[in-house]
Image (cartoon, rainbow, N blue to C red; front, side, top):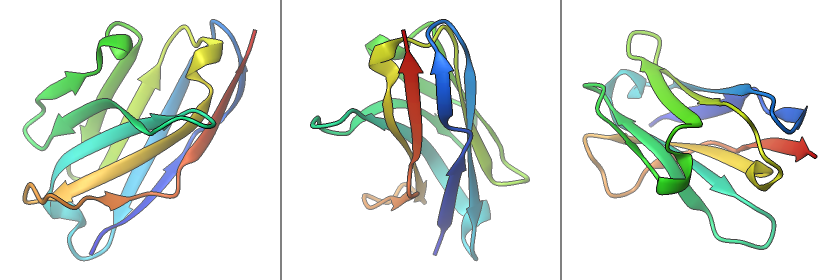
Length: 118
């Protein structure tokens, strides 16, 4: 089992930056193979923003290229999502997900709210 706890959300003005954190705990937290970050705007479906594997390979959604950076600390079982030049459309809940051994069913965090004002 893995428990995920996101933090770092808040209210920021457009153009600002935020670093979201996702800390994993539980007996399998050091066996996470994939970290994923999702964004959900009100009334819309959850969308994948970025992912990173345990070996450091990253993947970004097209809209996230250039403004989002995902990284992780393997030893501490923490993943981060750095967001630069925030835009109002970045507003929403950001969720962290983690897969152990490439499982089809990830563990989910509770989400952290980001609100960007223009």
